[in-house]
Length: 137
Image 1: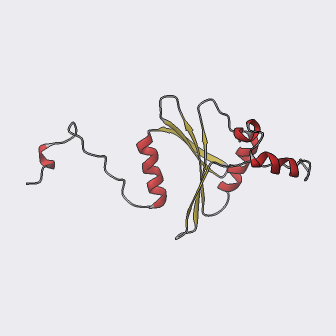
Image 2 (image 1 turned 45 degrees about the vertical axis):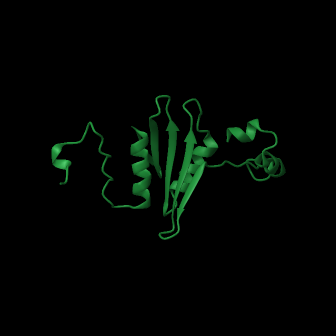
Image 3 (image 1 turned 180 degrees about the vertical axis):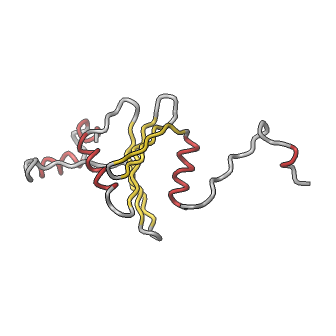
């Protein structure tokens, strides 16, 4: 959303000027940063990404909540923190669950969205975590 306000040449700014004032609250719109579609199951994952200093504005919050109320739609608000951890908010209708996770945990969560019900992928073995029973002779 910030790009629209800051970049006078953004196409969304042009469209927004065409729609301004139309409708009971004035024509305006919000965007989301990512939409993943699983054509096999016809599910959608909608994601909004924020840096630590960025705020989720009211229009975007309403948009995400509206998506979360639709069947087959999963909504995540993803904030990348200064220490490279991720604050993940799963928006589920009027309720939400927020937790701090690592990048590998976020990747696993995305994998689990694609393949629901599959067991978590085991953590990679490193020399520090390898034990003698892992060796196959």
